Amino acid sequence: MVEYDRDKLTERECARIIKSAVSPRPIAWISTQSEDGVDNLAPYSSYNYISSKQPTVLFNSPNDANGGLKDTARNALETEEFAVNVVTEGLLERMDHTSASNPPEESEFDLAGLERAECREIAAPRVAEAAITMECTLYDSIEIHDRLTVIGEVQHFSVSENVLTEGKVDQRELPTVGRLVGPYYTVSDLSSFERQF
Image 1 (cartoon, one colour):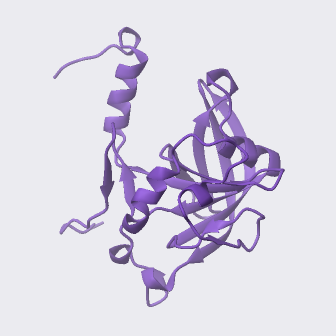
Image 2: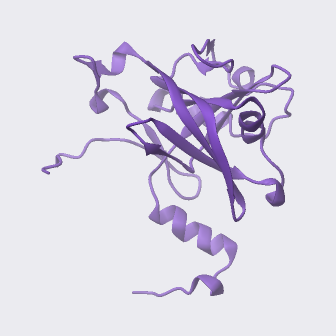
């Protein structure tokens, strides 16, 4: 076993290890709308849910002290809402395209040729082809080291009939995309082993 003292590693070396260890990472494809009405769409792989009883999710973005807030985080803070679109295999290439740097006045929906659909509870649009979208209102935000953690309470779910079996989301019909370290992605594939407990 090779041992590493965190304080003796470079920032890049630390990032490589932690991103390899915490993988595959789910991707939140977050849509927001600026106060000027410009639609924004960007993927975040530092993302997860906090609570399922009162559905609550979070994503992390660089903070002001680390190069400035990205459009997504700024929009979420200013408008107090955002939508999380689930990325599936058929959307992978277009999702990756929306990670490119884009001026705030230009929409990634247009850049990637994605159709918008109206959300029910928030002004921001959702990705029309997304199998699941969660519409969120801002619960809180907190700065942790070089990141801003944005927390949202889910107010509404949009779920495609194509991923439902007997009214329940069927993971076998939902080939979600995960982020790996470096330039790599992975697509979920069920293991033959099923949870026993």
